[in-house]
Image (tube, rainbow, N blue to C red; front, side, top):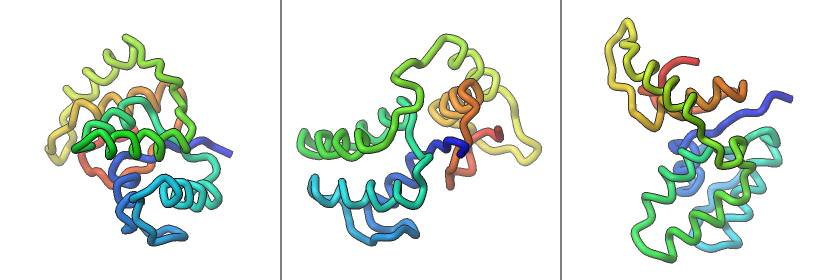
Length: 135
């Protein structure tokens, strides 16, 4: 089974009960966070996250309780990079940011870093974001 990184946009949709998934529960408590993550991972057991994705989602918390619930939710998914973001990841991300696609569109710094880590670890990336550089 190939491991797959799920991007922030998919995790946010899951959080809000909007992504096509086995549940339409919204994450508002630890029990619902656990149910939503468990339902997703039952269907997609090879899915996980990366450190930059954790930072994106955690940074969206508007108060301490939201940050704690986000941390709890994300802890339910494997962290494929183990928190190890390397200099080479930043170098690759910089190269990706400088590569303008045939149909010009912005490339976000975090998206480039996510793609770089996926390349280093040979992970697939599942995203709905059109600004992520191709793998």
